[in-house]
Amino acid sequence: MHDKVLILGGGVAGCAASIALARKGRNVVLIEREPTPRHKVCGEFLSGEALVDLHALGLDVAALGAVPIDSVRLAAARRAAEAPLPFPAASLTRRALDSALIAQAVAAGVQVERGRSVQALSRTPANLWQATLDDGATHEASTAFLATGKHDLRGHARPKDPQQWVAFKMYFRLAPGQAAALAGASELMLYPGGYGGIQPVEGGIANLCCVVQRRHLARAGYRWEGFLAKMQRECPHLAMRLHGAEPLLARPIAITHIPYGYIRRTTENGLYCIGDQAAVIPSFTGDGISIALHTARCAAAAYLASVPAPVFQARLRSALLFQMRLAELAADGLNNSFARAVLPFCLRVWPGVMRVTAALTRVAQHSAVDPQVAVS
Ligand SMILES: Cc1cc2nc3c(=O)[nH]c(=O)nc-3n(C[C@H](O)[C@H](O)[C@H](O)COP(=O)(O)OP(=O)(O)OC[C@H]3O[C@@H](n4cnc5c(N)ncnc54)[C@H](O)[C@@H]3O)c2cc1C
Image (cartoon, rainbow, N blue to C red; front, top):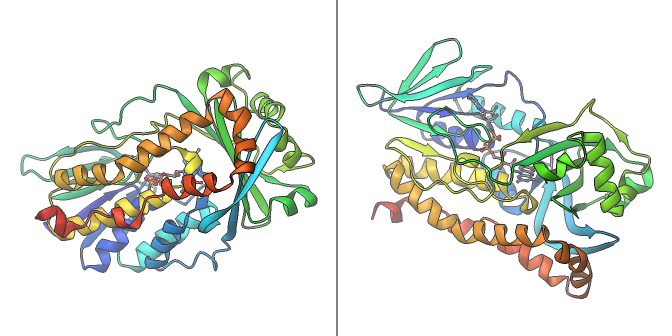
């Protein structure tokens, strides 16, 4: 029982932690509520750090069809500025990424239970963690990893999102000229109340992923069609990209409640919180997957070195704090009408700023929580 580890949620963080623990001989049970990987709201940008971690987990993203991304463009109103990325990057659909991660977990010997949803996580009188599944079945272990991403378990909820963010993702087949113009680039577009990104993914298609505060969505009648038209009016660069484009999903995928800037302060003994359950970085950084992989790797290392979960969680928080606060500051800047007006112009004059911001808002590999340091 003491060697058994429960991992709740089989997305990026849950799979990464389960692979790391299974490779060290632990008896790992991973519970994932979706029977098969599906589309998730995500810009699908893989930063350099994410690529390093995925490679270490045994994933060959190029073989999965990942598209190399080497530059970033920022567009607001009628201006756009471009800068080369200061690190290698790629894009890959979450469906492809999550499928490959689950397959890798199975290959590492993880007992994967798919299509099973955790309804509750509680303590037994014997001080074990008990996960109760939707059919009433239970799993018990002395250690659990909470990796349910955007979804909170009752009793373990993250704070409310005061800005009431709403996020959408839609795939498009762009007109040939626009697809060629977008090739190799990740484009960030600013508009009142939010921002969006468009970039190529495998299969010759493009992913448009955008966030907006609920009160701004209200002005578009809470409808995707109205919001898409409003974004294009406010950001003609996007209108140009989508001219002649064919939407590929019947309707966009949407989520609400995104507590940007959240970093978990503490946890209980034996419960390691990872991925979006540990920290939620503003999406424009394209660093959430990297943080999910990083927190999973650090939590697995901490558990293996017998670092208590509350000690790990506090150290992880300090390690991520600077990057998170900087990303939040930058996000506030993007949301300011004066900044929207002058940013592309400034970036054209001094494109280095974009590279510096991109580099500073990365989760640095050196900010790993060294378990040996954590115990001493
Ligand atoms: C609009 C937007 C755009 C983004 N764009 C990017 C980007 O371009 N690049 C980037 O790096 N990051 C991006 N992110 C962030 C990134 O998507 C997340 O940070 C990352 O997916 C977190 O990984 P995770 O493992 O914590 O959660 P997830 O990958 O979401 O995995 C959680 C898993 O838990 C499962 N689950 C949930 N509840 C239960 C339950 N009760 N029982 C069992 N299983 C459960 C879910 O089905 C899911 O598979 C973006 C986020 C948003 C909101």
